[in-house]
Every structure is written in structure tokens, then in C-alpha cells.
Image 1: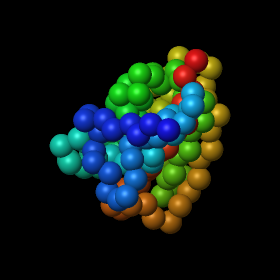
Image 2: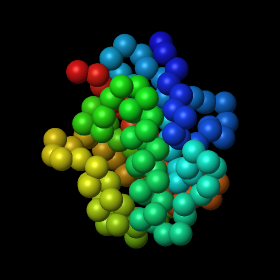
Image 3: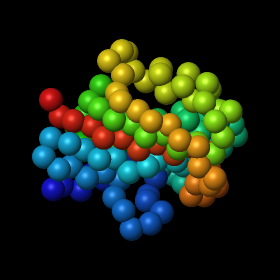
Length: 124
């Protein structure tokens, strides 16, 4: 097991790591719209989603992987009304062969954000 920490992602807000590599799999903790400098990008759902995806990408790059290595994604939203906008941004990070995914609506997320995304990636 190997702990992955990216200098280009925000510090965890609790007792967890950015990601953990176990064998060929990298499990990326849920990311919110805070950047590495601690600035929250929550002007709207598109801005939040862009920052979340940037954080995920940075963590994967630290692990030596790309977005193409993602095999499973979980998206948590506080409102399914944001689903279409999130899909637009999320989809722009992939070029086909999309990962498996579920999207669920929750009543509340850490730091009162509107979206949180976690992923599982596999080294080829």
C-alpha cells in the first residue's frame, strides 16, 4: 500500500489521504471545489465541478496516472437539478471509454459544497 499526496490539490480536511494505491488500483478520496491554495471555487456548479475535476486530475498525475485510468467514479450532488451541467464538465475530461459511475443526491456535503467526486483508477 502506498499513500499518494499531491501538492496541487487541497490539504485533506480530516484524517484521510488524497489517495491510496493498493496493487494496481488507486483510490482517490472525495474531492471538493477547494484549490491547493485553500481557495473555494463555488461561484456556481460549473466552477465547482471544474475545480473538483482539476483536483482529481492532479492527484492521479501525482500517482503517475491520467483520467483515462479511471475505472469508477462516484458523484455526490446536493441537487440533481445540477446533473446536466455537471455532466457537461465531467464529460469533457474523457475521450470515450467512460468509467463506470453512479451519481447520488445527498442532503449535505463537507464545507457546504454542492458536489464531491471520488474515483478509482487502475494502472494498466
